[in-house]
Length: 344
Image 1 (cartoon, rainbow, N blue to C red):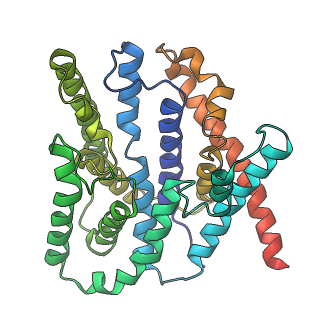
Image 2: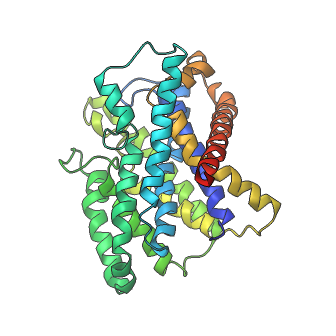
Image 3: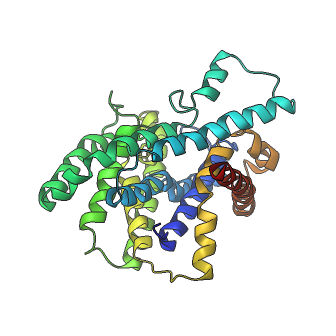
């Protein structure tokens, strides 16, 4: 059994907290529409969003980094599907039994029975396709000359990222990073770092690169928002750099990933605690982003009370930690139950 690397597990926890932040801002009603007139709270919300929007890419890069080196395991996908189905069906059943929801129609039933193909969680659908397809390319990627590999990635990014970032129109193939094609592109980057990234060093430089990219994302919104306010044009372009396949978002993702890759956390009690907490990160996502809960937990936390006030920053960190902690405890119980079932 391979030992988990605590630095990457710490990054996994951070990425999931950032993902919860994105949902806290959006589904909590705090993040204003990009083409709306907003005040200090709106600018703060979009600023926080800029520093967290890279989290999905980071989470995929972590998976890609280890998939690239590991052996192909056909059982990985069914195990992932079983966990997804457990939460998709289990949460729905619990809410029905307790009367929180009155019932479900045929479409909702299909979402429960086929959570991956019905995109109950869009991330899971794209990620599952990636882990099914990507490892089949590992031998080819290992044997590719570094220059050829690098040029291939650059050409792919020109098509999938740069063009989407600079052209003020939506391209037919552009799903803004919400698809398996973009995840496969991230896989190629993660595998490249695994095979050829040993020369990249320097934690402060990488963290500075992450911060600079996030600030540029926010600056792009400020500029486009001001232009829209004066001319009424390019309304769809205001938050373009906030999309997962945006070149600035990708830059922030890679820099943050490389920074944590260079962090060394020795094995010990702290390392064990980090790895234990990180083991529930995917379960945290499946619970808080369940179709019947994704708008309920922000309402339960009362995010609407401070939606238009900068005071939301005081509640943001405690709230997302609470969400992670509650979901983590639930997933620990699931892990314990699954271990018992495997023994039987």
